[in-house]
Image (cartoon, rainbow, N blue to C red; front, top):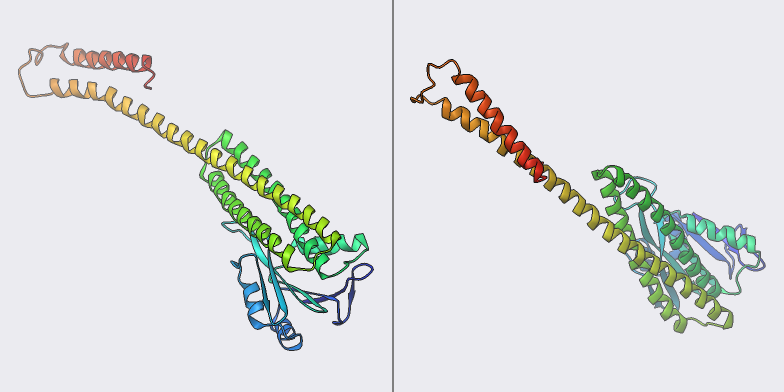
Length: 308
């Protein structure tokens, strides 16, 4: 889907492409790809690189065309092993052409457009818009991290009452999401440090870059904090599970040992041997009483040792 935006004196849609407008391409169809490659002349491998969900944040230039791939946060609507992940957002520019391409519909881009429309100022140039996209991505990383923090707290509260596999698995998946986040944020930071020297940056852009650096550093540090919290939490619950298993095995072993003594007594008196009690009426009650007495004695001893 293509959307054409006039970026001067605010952000408003226009019906067709014109020089110095912003072309927003979301979930590109074959028709969109033909327009980009044939009408605008964009290198075809630019589109395929953006479509690769594992593409790293980077900067490329070919025949005057500049490609910037920014990693942005994304939440999968369907159930997934990693509900929070990152995807590539492609920014392509050359002269009076400015295009963004994303193969997913994201809340970040919707919020970016809405915020810029509320500002009502538009963009001074394409460089200004690029750095504002960087800033928006850093802000959305922080938003997603707050959501992850709430999910971590919820899982921990559930585990405090009952240690179950579902909550532990959910924590593990959030741990994977944090790994994707911190890797993408570091890639964006490295890309930003390169763009400062690759793009024509003025004084206003320099201030914007400083804001982006602050937000990205905060997002990265927050990611690291949550990762450390999850690591310690997973280790703690792993220790709790091992301790519970050890306690259960200790109790079962103690019960097995206690039951061994009446079994041993019954086996000894049940042998076909002369023991003096074959014809005595008190023989069987004596064996039963002895079994019960030995069992109670060892039960008391194990209880005293806190083995059961």
